[in-house]
Image (cartoon, rainbow, N blue to C red; front, side, top):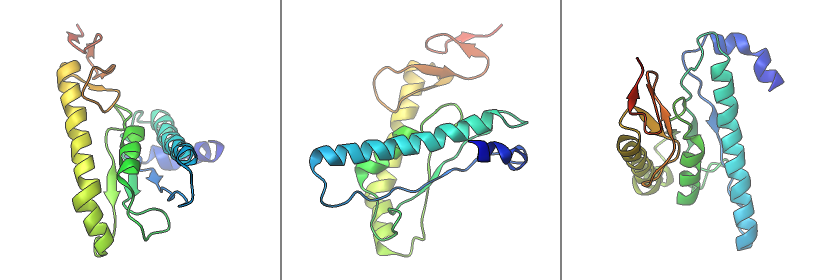
Length: 173
């Protein structure tokens, strides 16, 4: 945090913040319980990166800059595609409306493992997450806010400026 605070001059000159997320592939020998612990630690790490970026965003001169986390579609070692459960986990951790409402996936694209991942795993998951988030927000937040979780069912809403109430249905006067 202190180092980030010392870089305020850089953040104040920005129009958005782009934190990077690199996932580490779980070791192959983990028991199911250890694997769950590993994935929980990964989720906490991703959440901490996004939360720190939101804190920095709120402290900029402009205040509340968009936060657009980006992640590689391969694990940090660079040879294995990120597993579907880790893509979902990442989407759930970066979804912090109204400042962080998406994930930029990037890669080199020429590797067959990346092409297959984007077409068969990562791409469809990101589309499904967006569909769930948009549907939830339209249904439960009157189209004037965002659900705080990516899900079909009821969720707490974060309202757009000028709207309030549990379902963001009350216009400010």
